[in-house]
Length: 527
Image (cartoon, rainbow, N blue to C red; front, side):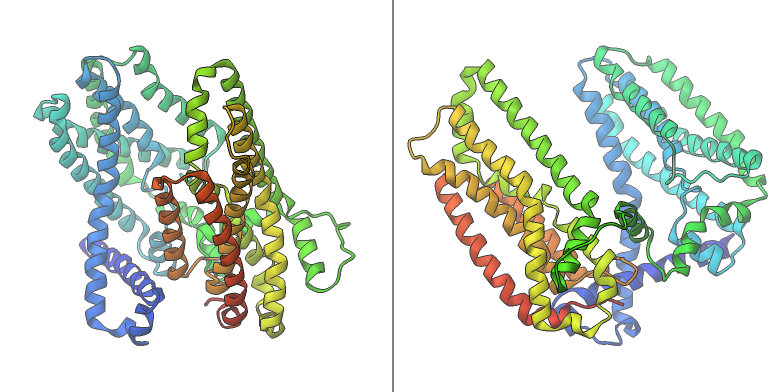
């Protein structure tokens, strides 16, 4: 057992360290400073090992910390004075749901694939050791946060100690139940592939946990404690089945089948493989789709027509939702005239908020991912496709298309704001109506240009459609925070709108120049 645990830790730590070193290599400027023999540097390996250990501790605690805060916050929000009974009720329902949602044992992961399929480790020993380790981490986190936060709802110490025992008992019972189901049916329960009945049960459970207390219905403290004691007893009884189960190898052969298929297809991750499959399903199979254009225009028109579902459908749905919201706001203004002044002031002052809204609804990421999976992953193997003139020509064609897609919801939002401004009392300067519409459209154009330019300059995908660029992730994170911070900007609509229009035009021109000069070197397949 000790040897199995040591090998497991070594294996998991090795690929974590390699991922950390790879991520460091992808950071701009830092990557150039780091040597090519990075993976052989003992100092950096020690640093990566320290980061890996810290991440193991952080991952074990952060989720349960948030979980306890949610339950404590929910108990505090409800009007019932019986906070202890309410907290225990929430803990019972949510822990039972969590026991079946997150089993540990029935989650096919990369480390299980490496250990059981590639290294052919003993399946029973590996499963029991790692499952036991997962339960120890769970119990430690429950005990820590139970002791730290239990006083907020006046839990006695013995009840705080009961919390981790109950959580472990539920996990053991859920695992034993699924192992028994495998023995009877021969089908392994993959917690990542569940049916509608599973989601219905989860929804009903959450509704019972957080909905019933709103109307004053929840288990009394004694009943919750009885359920917790029953969970501990069932867990102790279930441990015997887990220890005696004899088909761990066969079960994981089935569970890890997807990983085996992905490695056979070039090592794409589960996320990348799912994205590729989803994209392939969305492509139109109509053989009658054609185009009368030539060259890149022909290629682009075929791409757009065959990808209507993942390009235009989403934009149309967003535009429809925005239209409904605008109509609802207009109805509210007619029913409650007293809010017109507030709405008018908000419309004239809160245009910066729409930077974040346009960022959130922009289809740039989906567009570029579809481009790569279904077009560029093949064409980037040809040298003519990476010539500066050809790159700029196709960039402009694609930019035109992505702008058209994103302008649909943007126009609904911009026009809706102008109509709301008029309906709420209007403005002394009629130019404000035009500024509202045009500035929102320019925000949409900016994000279209931004996403496509970053795609051409950083091309983050491997041939297996897996995102590998650390720089790309950094740029996307910075973009998010800048857009979020824009919500704190307080500026008149007219001034902010004019600044937005000027910035958008300048950014678009700069993007074309940068793509022309740099994309021939950067727009390529990643290894």
